[in-house]
Amino acid sequence: MTASLALMVALAMGPEPGRATLPARVLPLPTDPAHLAVDGQRLYLSGFHSGKLVRFPAAGKEAVKELRLDGSGGDLVLADGKVFVGQVFKDSILVVDQATFEPVKRLPLGGEGCLAASKDGRTVYFASNKKEEFHVINTRTYQSRKVAYPPGGRGIGCLAVSPDQKLLYLGIQRGGKTPDGKQLSGGNCFLAVYDLVKQEYAGTVYLAQKRPNGEGDDGLPTSFAFSPDGGRLHVGTFQSPAGVLVVDAKKRELIGNLAFASRHQAPAFPWVDPLSVAVFDRWLLVAIRHNQEVAVVDLASHQVLAKIAHSAAVDLQSVVVHGGRVYLFGGSSSMSVVEGADVSRLMRSIDPTKAGPVRVTLVKQ
Image: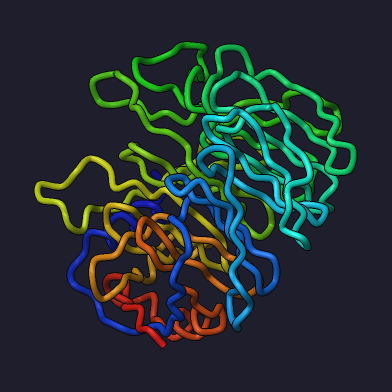
């Protein structure tokens, strides 16, 4: 572990820090929050339990639109003026016109998995959680190309296109091998990198952690966030004591981790599930489920500068950054929206030489 990462861990476990507040708008949600996509002032939300796709305004009084799905709501992305949403238990992707909010196509490629879209909106990628494959979908013609996972790979946790649009990153749950070609007991999760230009895999990175007794952990990759220059990839995890994993995207090597101490559990649980990661300006935002907070980490030093939470216990499982706003939500019936300018103002006021991260409370506007 590097010195900066060790410092981060020490700060996470340090004494009670200073305190601050951060204004937030609270939006009541018309469905249970499974996955979120943002397009300007419109928010699109799929509900796993409700089986709905919902469109509603981030601000203003536009009417809420609801569309009943064929199955439970899964992952979703926006591309080419359409919503692509996975339909869990129905093994299909529903394509919905954004303007009319009406279905235009059903793609029988599977409904349980992860979706990502190219920056130009011409291509959508669907990685299956039930089959050992992903699909490259033309958003105009709906024609698709199937690509098998690397040998032994199965299950998907997260999916992302590289900032330069040349690579597809797959967080695969099972089947990875250590650099010496071995598999440990446990999950053996790994990162697969697929070259979209050459149409072949460029390499893999073993992500599972080796325990002191020689066994592997059961951690799963759950989200990706690239540094602004694309040089580092941060991986949110589930069931991993290592916390957020840090990968050198150019060398394709695991170079460190950001571990977080338990806030509420006594005795402390082995992991706190930093499920969701996102980059805003020069900070990494980490939604830590068990701690019910969002850690703000300096990307250069990996020092935790602040920890953001509600005044009462509220689930914080996902963080999404879009259009200068930060969206925070979890298992509750509301979402907190924080203006990026307010986050920047607060973070620039924090003295990183002071002991411990600042405790920040979200205050309803």
